[in-house]
Length: 132
Ligand SMILES: [Zn+2]
Image (tube, rainbow, N blue to C red; front, top):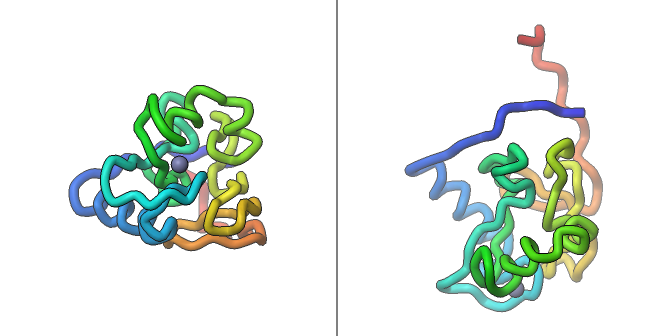
């Protein structure tokens, strides 16, 4: 169980994060593969209302908006979206919940913070000294 405060980015840091996500998806929808040069949106897999943040692992580029396209699908079909990893529960860490990326052939893959993905789950990080 990982508890960490939601990451909130703005300005250049947010643009950086968005670039990493868009590059990872090859500027196409993470779910259906449709090319997105405009009108796409970055979906928070763990919704902000569930405590999700702006981590790269928590973001996917989807076609449509919060109500249309695959972005709308993710919000309208929470159970299916969870099965495919496009939705993450409040008690889960997005980095540890695989998502069925179109670019990965629909295989479940784990997203990292650098804009990469892997079929292998991430290795637990080294402890970083005393807990705050
Ligand atoms: Zn789509």
